[in-house]
Length: 392
Image (cartoon, rainbow, N blue to C red):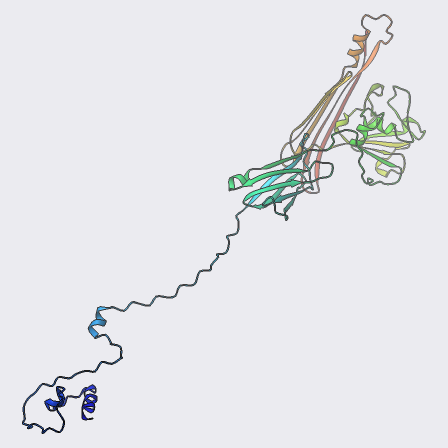
């Protein structure tokens, strides 16, 4: 019992001077007499009992292992990063009719990106047939559907800014290019029921008119002509001298060349012809029977246009072109050689009774300047020369 108490005291770190029997672990009985306690200097060995307490490193060991600085926590990266939105480019294009290169305004142009995407992008062409659309980079499909035209489709690849900057020029094919076709249109604005107007497409294809705008008026109800070679228009049985003729609302003395062969302005330069048999306003003063007005069309402003023709009796040409962004120019010239043709036929034939034949020349010149959205400056010149020469 005394030995156990001695061990507990040693664990507390106290040093005691005791007899050798107990301090050195002697097995002798405690009842043996104690040795003399003479004063002497001794060194006591302390025996430590092992315990389960973990060993704390000494200050030297701690100094040999420097403490690492604490690192800030890194944010956790998502398992699947968000996809990068595709790059987009601005694409410009123009839509024209195949064969005639006529711009097509007000047409929907669809872009499928990618080509199998059921939801396309859409743009509408302006009055010059131009369109602009922002499309994502990659392969795309263009599609245009228009009434009376074949469906247009074209694959495209917009990979870089250089390919996107290239102008897209699309040509769609018309189902029929026949001159004789049926077109249903609304009625033009009229002053009263007595006013009739014929567009260029109508008087060029009207039977019996031979492409002439004034001859087309002669075929309308209530209008008649004199003899076969007459240049007069008879309106509702009145005198031919009571009919008034205008070119762009300006009166002219006569509307036909000699013999009624053709009107004094080539048909390709005429935009419309108005026929008023009654109810005309005060701007047409001194008009009794009726009025025939030829309206010269404005020159085209998209590009240079040229037209020429030749037949057995005359030939001519018409050119129109833009000058700048606000002005344009038109010029048409026509010359007849019917006298030379009849002279060649009559030469060497004694039975040919025709001795004279008419020849004519005419020209039309027009300059248009669009000053602003409401004001237009226009200069129009019309010239006509008729001659009657001998055939033989």
